[in-house]
Image (tube, rainbow, N blue to C red):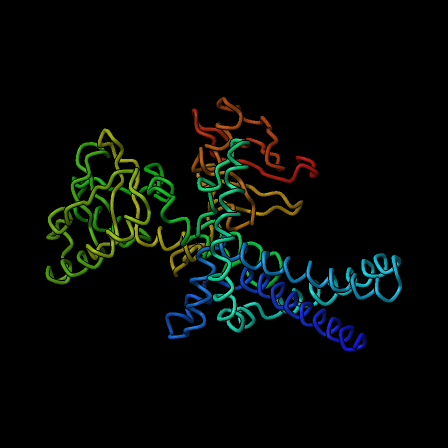
Length: 425
């Protein structure tokens, strides 16, 4: 009779350890399962994936139920083990029970199930989800009371679990891609492309526009031959025309429309008036988000807009290509000469045009210069130095040294940039 009770107790201990295995593995699998993967599978008709989605949506309730079940079976298994070993070894059985159960719980009820769950979290989660749903429903009153008690204790210390801020989806996605890039699973180009997509809603057109100092604008009152020649000689498809002052843009000439007009005039350029075939310019505020501007380009089926500030002054121009380059990087065609304004030197330093956007520099060289307070590298120098630097001055910040090579009036036009451990030439 004693032997039967002993073996039943041993079998009960093994069964409880099996339940502990199940709870530990389920906790790891359900917390590590990919939410995006479960959402996609659920959309494709997987009922188990949908169940995993619903369970993980109430994470506190899920974890509370699993931890409650796991602690119950572990404590019960340890109590039975102590009882069995005390009946065999007397009081020394308590020490033996502690050693044996610690080893069994750590190896078979913690490390092993969690390792297996981490190997295949999605599949493991979908397998255990139906049973865990029952566990959550059974323990719901207890876990609810426990959570209420925990929240009350936290509030005594000035903490509110309901107001805890969670990481945004954009930040989580960006962090995941950066991590996978550091692990070698995502190439730099793909990381930059996805980062560009995520940045669209955070950027304004003033961050990606071509500044007015780099715009090509032509006087509409130029002689027709000169004006047509200047338009055809330019590398741009669309050229703004101004009258009297460069701020007074009266139209934009498309090279294709100009060629059609020349053809209709039988090649007589003197009969062509570019100002008459120019279309009405489209002005957009410099505070427009890049995402909104992209949508506007697609809606209007237009690729070109002039950017104005709050006073209506032209600040630059933005094209559909400028926005696409924020996603895919520099788009070069047969008229482009690669990335202008950046030249690598033999000593590892770079000669940088002051008007080069910080975002382009970061993307090209995989740097991490801040672009919140300034758009161009020259603007960053002025912002960090808190002054307009003189030619020859050097500054060190963000692990880089900047030397002003050229300055025109109050504009920094050329810089040399090199790591702080490289000597300036």
